[in-house]
Length: 78
Image (cartoon, rainbow, N blue to C red; front, side, top):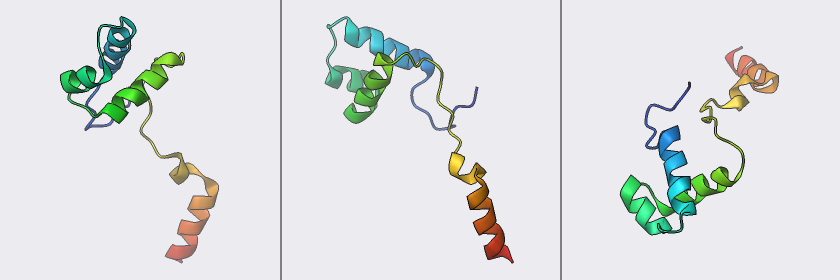
């Protein structure tokens, strides 16, 4: 599993946030205080929880893997 080294919420934390919010007993501000993240982060987690996306996200930047980026970099080196 490729998780960023400074991640604040693990997969289990995200699932717990989704479960607590769906129980309708917790508000977004309460979840943000409990898990020590911002409210926009909670909203993003809830948005992803509505989708069937349970796998952790990969933190690699795909721009660096493209051929166009490699050719531009090679031209700068030469």
